[in-house]
Image (cartoon, rainbow, N blue to C red):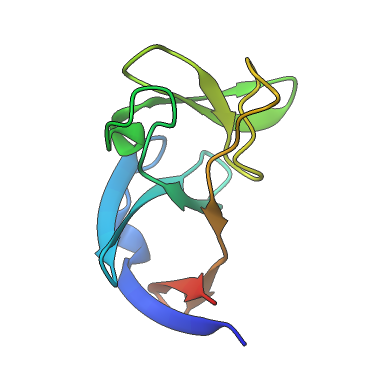
Length: 108
């Protein structure tokens, strides 16, 4: 069963940029893309081990919303967490929903 935890207000998320939230001890990178959707994935870059994905550059590749890690520039699909440069690598993603103006992240 998924538990939904409030992490911030929607307006706290700047468009096309990342924000980090600490949720039950885990760093989660939140991204509000140009279409208004919010995505959540682990803030940990699996290649460097650094918690930096929220500082990555938001973009798109082949129509998929992406973030490029600021460390070694690998690109991750914001919807699935898959690395588009190395299909064997993936970062955990989290469910996101809006409850009024509040952003909630799902935890198992």
